[in-house]
Length: 244
Length: 264
View: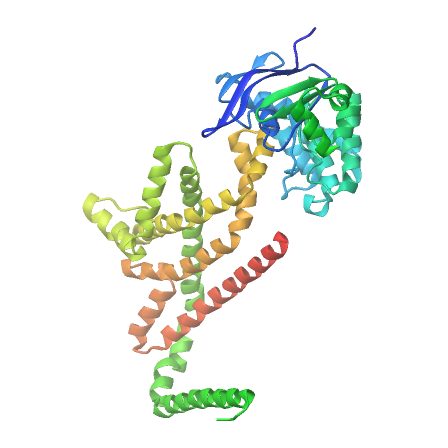
């Protein structure tokens, strides 16, 4: 077995007095898709955000491809450039058109030439079905289109893995499908993915592993069909009975 | 009284108009029209000021405003970033600076820089008294604009910074390519207001004295008043100030309306 893409051990996170993560141990293998589900406030987004240190872990270790990213000496920007992240609210840069949204980090972080960055940007836009909108500003795109551009922006950095923080939660129901389709394609190409989601259908079909979190701990994890079909824990049953 | 409400309102309006007309009649009747036309509308004086009022006075006013504004923005950006620094000392220094210079009359700072510093240290800032006065205006306007810029930077949603960081962008590029361009858009209307205030504050430079080719509008008017023994130059410079500042405030109103539309 090769090094896991993401390895988290005994992770604790406090917001002030409040303990949001109470000792998390888990890992994501290369090319695996791990979905994290759970009620709001369970700490699942915080866990995801700790993996690229948008949240600072209080204690515990996180290894990304074997590198301890909680080490104060680590080059955080370099680590982050290899981890794509997709946000619930898309967070496209509103003052740049689609193409510039995809090129700015390629140019500044990857030091790619303008023509190279544009070429890669166009390829990734093609992939998410947004090739015809490269000159459009985010405000003129629908939520689903914005999210697909946001995925393309992360992909244009050629990341080794992708983090998704409730990528479809802010979308109108009819726009969810397009975004999930892009994520499904990505998974089938072998991208390593960690997905915080409420889309149980996606978790069941695409996920290799499912993690159920509640109140800062992992209560249950395993094969998605197993966890969703025959949950062992009372709290998992209760949660699933509400969302399914 | 059994008057209808609309009738009563009409009577009240008529009363208000009558009072205004009475005041105007009294002012016009008692005004010394001859003195006004002789002192404010003297043809020879008006002709004598042309074209220097524009080519020297207005030109220098605009020039000093632009210099003070550009310098003020640069200083304000530095102060705003210090205010937002994780280092407590920087935050503290910036706060002290801002509170200090916002608490003083601009004129005191101008006199201090132009006359106090040379007297105390035997050192004259570059550009003589005008250079010193401009440095003072930069120091003061920088303090005001720093708070505006800080508010603009903080108004950029947190997710924008996070998106840039998640792409591996360092603090510098995150600030320069993502945060500042959005912050500047937010603060354009208040900064334009600051620009208008600066147009008027350049008149304070009158106090430090200047050479003939450095004269701005207020000094121009004041010297004209003495040279011609006539107040026409004051009316003239007042009109030029309005020609500069009214379009600028119209621009602010336009920008604010556009921004409200964009925010929707």
